[in-house]
Image 1 (cartoon, helix red, strand yellow):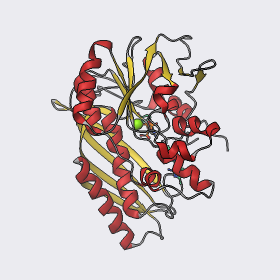
Image 2 (cartoon, helix red, strand yellow; image 1 turned 60 degrees about the horizontal axis):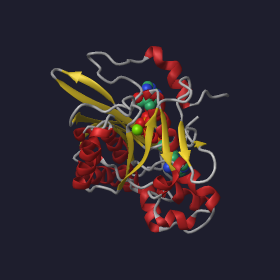
Image 3 (cartoon, protein in one colour; image 1 turned 90 degrees about the horizontal axis):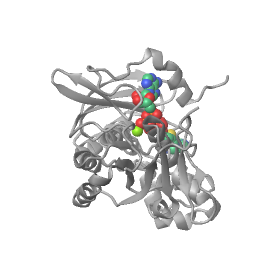
Image 4 (cartoon, rainbow, N blue to C red; image 1 turned 135 degrees about the horizontal axis):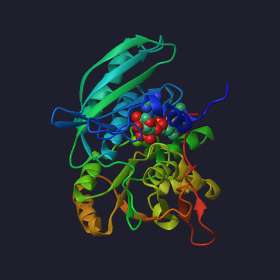
Length: 328
Ligand SMILES: Nc1ncnc2c1ncn2[C@@H]1O[C@H](COP(=O)(O)OP(=O)(O)OP(=O)(O)O)[C@@H](O)[C@H]1O
Ligand SMILES: Cc1ncc(C[n+]2csc(CCOP(=O)(O)O)c2C)c(N)n1
Ligand SMILES: [Mg+2]
């Protein structure tokens, strides 16, 4: 069976889905949708995590899976500049999932919920051949909701959070190497950055995305939604890769894994020149994760194909908007 790929499929499904309108300030196509409920905007997103696709039971405990289900959704809310609030859980229960494992799964969700202010307010349980958890989260905008489409030429690009740790853990495991603890922790219990997302929204960032597929591919979503090219400085961005990852990976794989492996749950935002000082001050005060300026927004070299370029100290820039995970 041939597959269109997840991004083409979504484009094809467009006619069946809601775009933006007064009742839906942000429709399909962003990290979360924004829906007007009475006089209030509500931000909503869902993520499904599946045994064998997003986690393996030999690497993650049920509590880790519960934590991750919350973290990946909080990360999408963060990317909109929204404050997380509550979630409902879809539990697809397979025969391997014992009662004790279900207790642990919910303990992990509750732990992450306490960390980021997400109340688990309900859900649904069904039987399934493979176990998975789907979490639908809602939040409220802290300021104007930040979409992927607001980047403009002249903006600077800020990256909040480290890159490559979760992907390096899976790479090491696949190679049969011992997986360093900090990398395993990044895979098992990713850290979402909601305070940073809110800080950037309040300080005037104009576009934002969380990095779930990989910096290259996710920056590509911003480039296409905004109709711009993004230019990323290799030296600046590689400073966001922890030394454990740099020490572990062969040099020829390092950039590809760190910038295209995915599941970083870092934030990438575009900031207009006159908001740079405010964003720096807000991120410094929030102190949730290290941050750095990694590039700039430019007019598209080819307006029909907005692109992401990695500038290297020697040699021509490399196009990296295909560097990322695709479910096919
Ligand atoms: N099966 C689907 N039906 C309708 N809309 C979908 C479906 N899958 C994805 N979307 C929408 O497509 C957009 C991109 O989805 P995607 O899952 O790639 O989001 P993301 O934030 O880039 O990644 P992640 O899943 O890691 O959060 C979102 O607006 C999402 O709501
Ligand atoms: C067992 C196992 N194999 C591979 C991976 C890597 N992985 C799975 S989904 C994904 C992208 C984000 O997913 P989504 O787009 O669904 O949010 C990545 C990088 C993993 N975590 N566990
Ligand atoms: Mg996202």
